[in-house]
Structure formats: structure tokens, C-alpha cells
Image 1 (cartoon, rainbow over the protein chains, first blue to last red):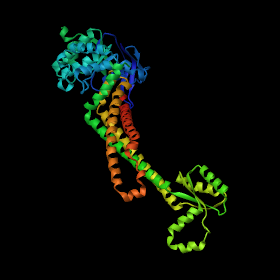
Image 2 (image 1 turned 30 degrees about the vertical axis):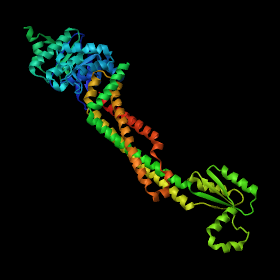
Image 3 (image 1 turned 60 degrees about the vertical axis):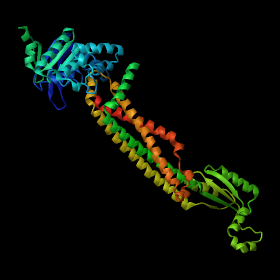
Image 4 (image 1 turned 120 degrees about the vertical axis):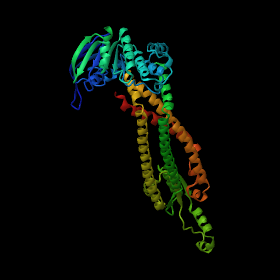
Length: 227
Length: 301
């Protein structure tokens, strides 16, 4: 669960990135966060990952009160979150398998579990044939699938996807969102940040629109494919 | 952390060396040159210092005793001299020995000695050697306090030159070694920073997936340690070659050797264990610490 209560973020430069934002995303929800560049979307993600702290207000993520969370406990919080970046951020020197297995190694998972879990997650994103490929041998869509598999492998409570379709062909974007929705249907909360309104209109669901650091719209709409 | 986790992290450190081989090679070279610069400077200082020490030890102080000093008094003075903390060797040189030696060295003037008959104008003396030449003046002052001392002859000028030389050498070599250590540390730190910087994204990803600081730093630590270890091994080999080449060159310089004494040049075989330990452990430690410290900056994500 993600909950922001009257949260404001002011950068040291004096810029108000978020201004008294309150919202709640329940466990198992799927929400699109939309808004133009500089609206405050990235600040919100940084806040949820505790990369930055709120100047005001309370942030709760998966049961952690971030304003009270000590630095030492940040890895613990992040292990409950899977993150997918626009630029994939795969480790170039690692194969697809290693990139995904790496997350489990971070949490000191048993080798036997890693050997079982990683191929399973790779199969979920349909990349069995690319298991031993390096990131530079993959297309944009494939890289993003690896990133999704990496976010998923740790069985997180929440997946944050930051413009996951930003760097891939438009026709593949729908596949990526489909994949994220499939993950959500298994119970994982998904927060997808995007500025692609067509995509949002197509899928529908909960839309949170941020403008000038404030939530200006938070509604559930029907998707185009629902008729 | 489980043993498998540690094994994985060590494996990562080893893999990283190959995966980032250009940066690893750069770190290796910098470490090698730094170790060589510092190591050879220290060895040079150590040798020069030993040579000066050897020259110092050849110097003796002669304590002349008053004419008419009785045998028990002579014996007492000998014991008192031996008891002085800075005195390493005491040998008695009787006036008879001195007279014989003088006669032999002046054989052409036998007539002069004949005129003296049995009268021996010389006095008994003790020859002593001091341990620390810096404290020779204190030792002489202490000897002057004894009774029955006629005069003391010491190589004051020579001692002063040596003491000054050693002081200057210590300062100059100390400054050179310090400068080299500082320059080496700066270069190593920058090379490691460049190496870590080239992998900052990797570090960021690790942080985002919930890696602890220790988990991130450990492979860098292993990588730095291994690089440093091999730099130390090669530096040791190169030092051994250079050092032995220099020693054999010196061995052919008989004129120089007669001044400094061959025994004062330290053979590599006498010192290779501490030198090896310093190079290998020093290399591994500097490599490991350099990497571990440099990762800190990119960990705060």
C-alpha cells in the first residue's frame, strides 16, 4: 500500500516539486500516474524509494513510514518494491539470467531457489530464448521485459514503472502494459508513470494526473478495449 | 550472510577484474609504479643509512691516561668505560705497545729512539668504539669526569660531517618518500574513482533493488585487493631484479667499495621476506582500501 498524506517536497533550490499531495493506492491496485514533464512525477517516485525525503507530510510505503525510516533500513524497504525504468538500467556486463538472479543474490536467497525462480520469471516475460544474452544483444522491448522480470523476481508488493514504454516502439508499448496488468492481476500493486495519454485511454483504470506538484485528477475510467 | 553469498561476492570481484579489464589494468599499473617508487626509495634510504652507519662504526675514540696511573686504577677505568651505555668496544693499548708501534713506523729515525734509552715518553690508552655517533660528545663528557684522564682524541670533524650528512639525508629521503606516498595515494584514489565512476549505474541499480552498502562494496574491495596483490608481486620481482643489478654493479666498483665497505651493502636475500610482505600486503591493502573508500561517494542513492 502507498499512502501520501499532505506531502510537500521543496528542493534546496526553492522549487516546490510536490505541493500538499494526498493519495492512497491500495494493495492490488493498478494506477497510472500521468502529467507533463516537471509536473512532479519523478519526485513522487524518488519519494517512494526514499531517495529524497518529504519536506512536509507523511509517506507510507508497504507498511514503512518513510519519514521515520533510518538509512540502514532503506534496503529493506526497496526489497518490497520492484522498479522498472524508462532506460531499462540493466547491468551491461551481466546476461539476462544474471541481471535477474542478481536481485535474489542481493537478498541472500538460497542458490537452489535462485536456480528455480529465475527461469520461471524469464518464462513469464517470454524471454527463454534470450536467457544467456547480454543486454546489448536485445531489442528495446526485450530489455524492458528483462527489467520487468527483474522487478518481479523478488515477488515485491509494489511495482513502480517509470515511463516503461518511453524508449520502445509504440506497438510494443501495449505488450509491456499488458504484461504489467497481468502481474497486477496476480495481486501485485502496480504504479505506472507515463505521459502517453493514448496508452492510458486504451487501457483505462485509475488515472492520477499531477500538474505543478498537485493532484488535479484522480478517477477511474473505462478503457477503449472495454468498448 | 550465507557462505554462498560471500562466495558469490568474491566471484563477482574476480569477474569484475576481467569485465573492467582496462580500468583494472590502469589501477594495476598505478599501484605497481607507486609501490616501486616508494619501495625503491625506502631501500635506497635503508642502504645509504647502513653505509653511513658502517663508516661511523669504524671511528674510534682514544682515551689517554695520565702517566703514573696504577694498574688497579687502569683496570677500574677500563670497567667504567665498559659500563658507559654508548660504548660498544673497549680495548687497552699499553704505552709499551704504542712505543713499539711508533718505533716500527719511524724505523729510519732509530737514532732518536736510541737516545731515549729505556724512557718511554708515551702514555697508556684505551681505544673505544661508540654505538651512536650522535651521542659521542655526551660520551666524551662522561669520560672526562673519570679520574686520571690525560686527554681524549676523537674524530670530531668527521663525526660532525657524518651526523649532518645523516640528518640531511633523513630529511631529504623522508621528504621524497612522503611526496611519493602522497602522489601515489592521489593517483590510486583517482584511478579507483574513475573505475568506480564507470560503474556508477551498476551501483545505482544495486541500490534500487535493495542491496546493502556492504554488499555493493565487497566485490570492489575484493577486486582492489586482488589487483593490489598482483601489483605487489610484480613490484617485488622488479625490485629484486633492479636491486641485484645495482648490487652487482657496485661489486665491480672496487674503489667505491673500499670506502663504503661491501659488508655494508644489504643483499636482497637478507631482506626479501620483509620486502615481500610489505609489497604484497601493502599492495593488497592499498588496492582494497582505495576501492572501498571510492565507492562510498556513489553509494548514497
